[in-house]
Image (cartoon, rainbow, N blue to C red; front, side, top):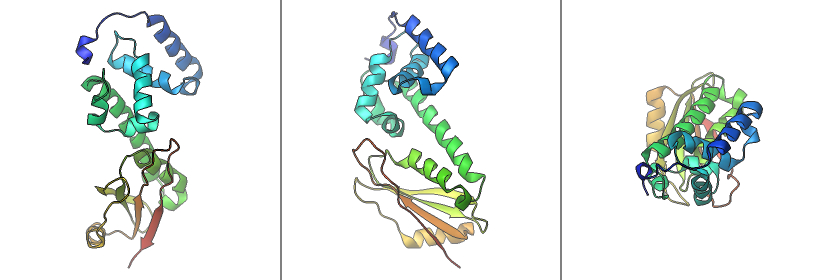
Length: 200
């Protein structure tokens, strides 16, 4: 059923208040994964018990990472999810990625390697297809552009050297980092190979 049809009152108000209190007193680490999603959905669907929906989403996408990485249309196929609920999930993903990207953008990449890996893992590790991206660096190894070069299938993605080099010349890049993921259905996130090469 669409969200607009699910307006019946439920008896979870006290439960929601307990989640809010736990969050206020102990932070997000005190909440289980399904409770985080449940509370987020409760903000988008205030008059509905969102616990079953949260658990269904985590089952469908294999956890929080898979849920956040899922595209709009895939989430919309889960019964009970409408545009408002999906937007709540996608805005959380966008905010998290922005925070991680800012950590990378403000320091030389080689001095913040773990921050770079955290950002790339959050953005790409849970995707169902291979994605290729190119990070352009200046002469101080600062990130000047992060470009998504394309998506492929579950086991391959094409990258065109001529296009990468042409773009690097246009941007005046001093170094490049080429990155791609390896999609997996294992619940632990896959490692992301990262290769860099400088050029004159």
